[in-house]
Image: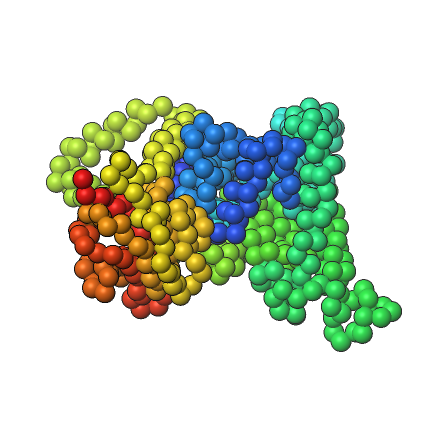
Length: 577
């Protein structure tokens, strides 16, 4: 197979990899992490690097600083929104694309069938664990993992080994957990030391470039302590949602200082804890991996041991989170690119284990993706019908595709273009809509409040019930009331009140909600909405107010009330002229 055909293998799956990442980004993220991103971006926007107090290593903090600049340029407020998730994930899209290219680089020279190459590239592009932790969850673990496996790949390429140390340093500066690969990296580096040693000097300007903003603002020490020292003891549990050895022995969220096997906690029992035993087990495994790596000549075994070291990191050590099992996935995909069929079940199991543990905590709901998935299915169906009806059109499209230059960099241009277009649309959609007021109108909630009742939390003016921006149907509204059904908000009307125009809908922060909106004038119900479902655009209405003294905005549940976040949008009372 010639090189052009090989490149087209990569181009096909690179485009599909981009599409998969962008598609699954539509799903709802893990809210706790989004809150951290938003808070850290605000810190960087308000006080620069000197004000940053997060517990994340510096490389990704630099990207959050860039995200903050984007918010400043667009004039938008930093909120937990689809825009925030999208911007935080942009480096992840490039990392997944870069990982796919590394897989293809090792796969391309192999003399195997086209179908097998398609299956390996497809499994890498649509890997369930990587999709679950990145586009669905909204986490960024793939960025340092790309740097880590990239450094291993470079060590196995004599002409490029000099760049391995800078890339591994970049991995550590992005996420400290990449230390898990040090045994394999160290063994391979010693074998390549005659070439790779120059990379140590290349790492010095890289370190300077990454750390200089924090050094300049006097926050370098705080950053180091928060990201590499205190963060290691933030969750001092045997297992934190991680299905590992300690989950099996002690259960979830148990202190890692609890003695094992009935020991008392005195004498030698002080050391028979997950904290000590887990670290000892991983050290022993790492020593074995290091010794093996000193002897490795075949890239297949290097990637295999890197995958198992990442897996051992998750299984043996305490204080693990559910996501850290994903450390085993990128090296396992490189292992797959060079492996024999007998290794495939192990690699498949690693991905399924990782995807399962991650999805148990943050799976996506169907209502997140019904609309875009429906569009994909319909477009596919009608496109197939068109091509079957007009065979010459199919041939013309194939000829056109063959004329596309076989450039490896092409998918990266496509990703930059896609990100730019999506960013423009999101910025446009997320600009808040405000009520139009004149001398004869007033916002309803500026009138005297008579009483308010609500079944959960309290109503918020200009914010949702969870204190986020009022967002319905993907649009942010600057004026409104965020409530939770059942609720009743009563306002006193002016004597010359003429009409009320308003919008209503379930806030996007709770798409599965179902709410019934109604309005009562004095003691009479004058308007009701019927059942309003979440995840759809809000509706707008207008009612007369002639002669009414008080108005009551009421919401009621329809079935369970778990997600009944009800928004009254742009409520404006017009007075008689």
